[in-house]
Amino acid sequence: MQLAHHASTAFQAWALNLYNYYAQQMAKLHHCFPNLQFNFPCSIFACCSINFGLQTVTVEHLDSYLNYLFRWCAITALGNFDYCKGGHFVLWDLGLVIQLPPGWTILIPSAFLQHSNTKIQPGETRFSLTQYTAGGLF
Image (cartoon, rainbow, N blue to C red; front, side, top):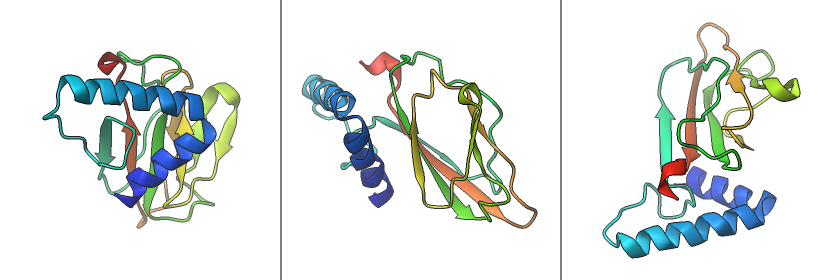
């Protein structure tokens, strides 16, 4: 739950107006569906995906299915890997390759920016926790 809270507070710090919009919409959603249980009580995001593959790697992609361009997601790298040698986060449209150490979180508009991550070294592990709110919810 601390990772979920950290991602939400980082989102609040970097995009306060968007965070407030999420908070308003989540409150409306909870008002309409009071029995709705959120994944994490301290997270502003409605959804999460946990990638438990031992060497989680994603190919270049957009998270565009039912997502709006201005929506952000929080991606947290986890595991035991040398972030200087692999597991880099790639933002293709911006031409950026970012070292993302285990335990660090990056916030991106994932429906707008093509992204992926690079493979890690043999014998290392990399997992990820991605928090987001699908566009169809509000």
